Image (cartoon, rainbow, N blue to C red):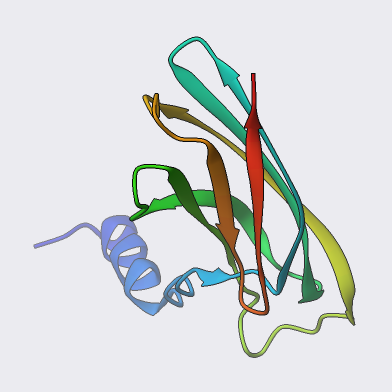
Length: 120
């Protein structure tokens, strides 16, 4: 039998709303990719269509060897959240290991994609 305090914690965890799945941000505005040794540092700036988005990040996707591909993702606000409706800036950065033969980086968003050459 659980103690009352532990039972309360267990019930609150079960009642907590699940985190929303990540989605692509609305658009990519710019991509900067710089080679540093064997790594490629990718910085992406873009926008979402409302407030409340969090945890913006870049996730690697399948490329063709010449182009590294990243998805620009973030966690959207909950459907019941009160948020402003406006284009708001978001940024994310990732360091990719390897990519020696890659010449460019492509960032994917919901409305567009942007490709940039890797700077040496």
